[in-house]
Image (cartoon, rainbow, N blue to C red; front, side, top):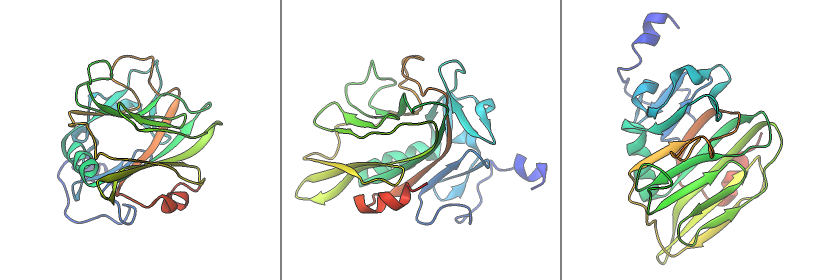
Length: 228
């Protein structure tokens, strides 16, 4: 692709590009520099803000580690897509490469700007933990350096006022939990790779290769989705 074309990616093109995974509502492909949200191709600067550092993106993905200061938050069309996804039920897939055992905050969804100030939050840790401030608490084992795929289903409506959450990584079986509430979070902030407080809970030497947003998937579908 010519440099002039790359420079003009801020002007959204209509339709879904062929590189977007089938059925996805949003796709951030950091490895290839291709970004899709709200039905159109977007420039990454319109989707990630806060202390996001574009220089942290390379052919390996978007690196987050305590020392590099890259602390992205969802903005614009991405924030809108994720907020709508949480309300309707959604699945978020992370494709990562870790230098060591995965650790640190993978995603934080809160009603305020960080973990310390939020009264309500949903958060996921790369070591296999998904929780909120109420009843939700899912744990699963994930370890080892190298490539990992992690899928989380949030608030899938299973009827009767109940909602299912699920975690699945690296082609294993999903771990699920059903709660009797949609979510207590009125979304203000969605962060990737940190909790908004400082470096202590950031991802530890991890490249996020891509993030994909889907409508909520059944637990059984997550095994194939996360297969390496």
